[in-house]
Length: 444
Ligand code: ADP
Image (cartoon, rainbow, N blue to C red):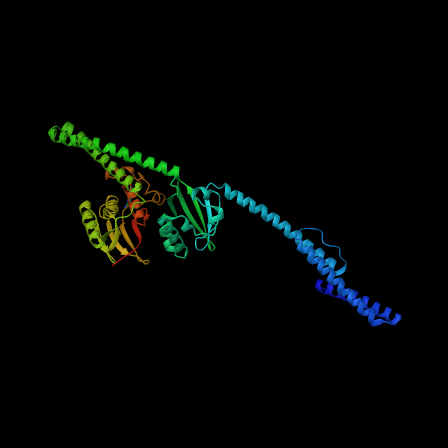
């Protein structure tokens, strides 16, 4: 017999037994239905009594021992007590976990917020009070973007949320924008903001990167100052060397050494110029982009001409431009970045090689500039380090061809600053493709 049937039949059995007993007693005393009704009433009364005891016991909401009751009701009280104890135990365990979680989030060195679907603040840890000047009592429920009024934060948050709406390609392209650096409202700190979507909510983490930023600025300023200080003496040395070369051109003993000295001083001038350019670009990452409209058809033709001059007929050079032709950005920066890629292709492709310069619109309607060569290619383990400053695969070859080791670092910075991505695809012995993909919508 199943458990519920057992309770039912057991109760019916005892109730019937009692009533039959009363009926028999009634027949014996001549008042059977009176006693039967009295028994029935007593039975109903007993049930009502147990029910009120149950309600009273439950309403206390404390883990007291249940009231003593016999039969059917005794089991009800026992089972309820067991469930209550089990729940209380779980509640205590959950509370411990919750407290531990609260303690760990409070101890976190970063400010952490949970934002709802419409950027309303659901929860934040105490670091947010320092970093964003938030107040627990009044700011919970307020949209975060209303409290921290920053156009770049709004743009970042909107971009991240639109990325979340399943545009995987965009997500990939925007990887450089996964964090946003922002001054805190009191301007005492630089915060690096990350937005992590989960379910219908967002976790916003803000890290204090003031000291890292200071160090970066110090390093940049140091490099810029050293380069700047070196520029003048180097120009003077180059000038004197030129004069010396003119004066001593009939003295073969000196000509060779002066020529070598001149070569080295030109190399140093190049390095200094590139370092200055890099520190200018790096130092101005937050600057507003120039909005030149660059005619890519014309630029591709110009790059081809430049390549032909550099190659001296040693390579076969092709150029193609298709699709929408206007690219928006800083003309000088983009032109020098593209030239750099073309000049690399020429310098690192052996004689007889094929170089193709291309501008096209890809399947995602994004403009792509590409330089492809069938030169020696680059081994896989070098590829991801190529954009580091002074990283060269073959130092000797780079120097021989007038390289400074800074070209690709500059290119990467310029392209990233134009909301683009530099993609390097290279196979040893098969050649390389350097592609700049731009996120901006292309115009006719
Ligand atoms: P460099 O001034 O030395 O050319 P870059 O930053 O422009 O410095 O390039 C870094 C390194 O990447 C180069 O030293 C070279 O080894 C490699 N590299 C760049 N472009 C190519 C290419 N098209 N083919 C093969 N190797 C290349």
